[in-house]
Image: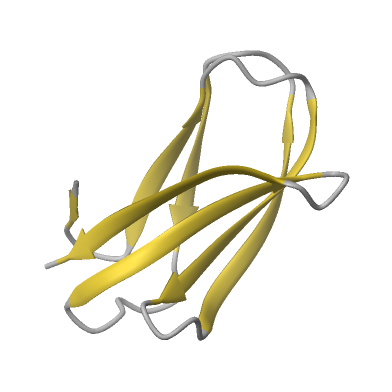
Length: 79
């Protein structure tokens, strides 16, 4: 799941409509950025644009729902 440049996409498959928070962190847990999104329907795709391209390496994406419960987590590699 490599990322080139300063953006990546998150697809909300089979997720209920509502508010979610997307967090990008490095492998040490330092938060690089967060974004609040409102999902209107299943399959919605959110493009996350970072202000600057982070250093090459592995990062963690975590999506939490309005109740602050983890809904999804994945690793990405920035190249």
